Length: 181
Image (tube, rainbow, N blue to C red; front, side):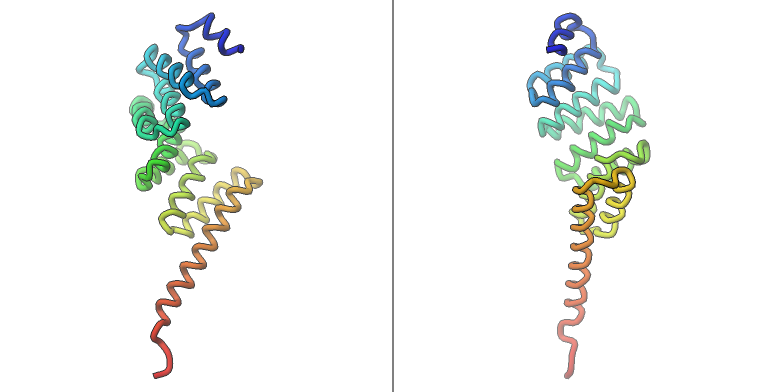
């Protein structure tokens, strides 16, 4: 109700439009969220925050191609905007571009080392690629940020288990055919 009142009172103020996009996205009103994010961008097309907000909204809508486009536009405006790198990494991960996702995660973490989402995406990329030790290290780094996160512990345990399993399979392949003559 308050955000609707604010939009009614100040429909041309980009900050109000941006906040409306955030609120509506968080309550699942995706069409309204996107409309307000696009309105905000139309009023300030040269600002990083407007591009980032639209990227964020589109990412939540699972429009990853659009989210990637606007995250990259935000980064072109402000290359050190960690939130844009984080959103880019999130959307690249979900679109399956793990190489670009890894690079975006590393950049987001360079800019903001305690960023949970980028650490999670990086660990997930490593796990997906079969780089289990790297996945475990990324989880360890993430646990320094949030030591109580059970989902990270589960991801780390999965990486460790898959690493042990892969090692056992490699040993089994090496020993096949080896034995008494």
